Length: 560
Image 1 (cartoon, rainbow, N blue to C red):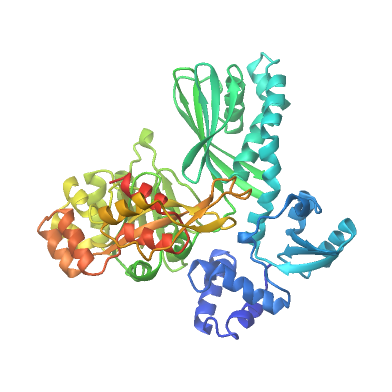
Image 2: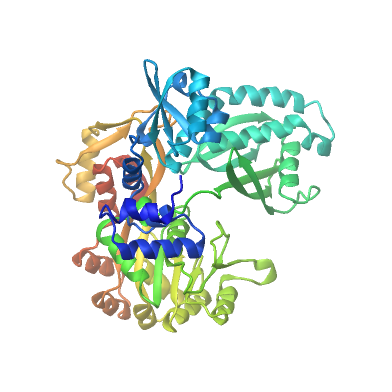
């Protein structure tokens, strides 16, 4: 539900939650970049989503319900059809006698309330919940897909097997239904990627959910050619080319959600294999706080984003969320008085008013050549998707020296290791020391499902091993787990969050860099100056009930 600027001012400024200057600056940013003011307020860390929702509910004089922790029974969901719930952006969540409680983004929507009253015959009690939470809760309607998925697929496979002509099969209902069902199920399961893998006797369909690959269904051989052909048709790829890799994109809607697929097809020993990255284009960029940054580390990053030049590096292995962190930084920096240019491989999301360039080695457009061209494009801020070689590193360093703020990523295990990595590429120590402002190292861990979280006691042997290996006292540490429920598919986890270490390049560390010392000495000095290590940040999140100790150990130890 969107309010006029004056209403938001009354809700936030008159209540004393934020000051007038912060509000007016957020309004200007929202207008300049064509964003919702509430998204700007949340993204810039001025207010949390829950706090804003509570203030709005007080203004509307209706109770607020936090849907994040609610597992809604099927008997309650079924009283309002999914299609109408999506249309009116509302969801039933509880019933007490003749009173049906419904969460709504607009509790004053008389038409929606009247529909719910007529359809259910109940007395409707409207509650307020924000758009994101309702959208997430509406996903609980998709639980039925889990039960029906294999049945739908098996019926469609039988029908698809009767058609021998590849092109005709790709355009007929059975194959279309198989693929649409896979897409819908992947979206319901919050998958980030869909894998279609052709093996000797079967075709495996797997989803990557919260960073882990999960087997979903096995299809018989013979159907994969029509399935891949259908994917090629949708993404405008060459149907008759099966010997070389092909990349494409496809956009579609699931309900009211615009979804983009980044498609990669490669030839394998038994046939073509497909990976489809799912990108929800309507998703709001996450703020640093939502990513998991907090405390001193968050303050250091925000202060360094205000600097007009220098370099901010984000490090970690593939799949650790580095690009998401950079996109969050760019969204903070993105105002009308600066020129932002990026060179990426690939471009994950389009950012309004930002010049984004896709690397294309076939045409000679590499990170180095693209970055060199961008320097002539009058940028204030530059983002380099990854520093892979000496040439890219030297151009990025040069840009940071000549008055640009440069953001980029490196593949190293920890923050301290980023600096020796640059030196190994051939960057001079004094140049690295004078340009690098801060280094952020990160990993992703799975979040405990908020609907089934419970406190637990870890195995005594594990606690002893952790205390010994990490040299930390866990006697007063609290531990949590998810016991599994329908909301999280009985996994105990839902979503992911980052664990971080933030290393500011202080005068003492600059001195060490110029002496070309090891990463161990840099790390030792950073800890003396108060840097919170990644493992300690992980333990803080364990104590806060965000993740499990096993997740932190897996994320940190497996990449050491």
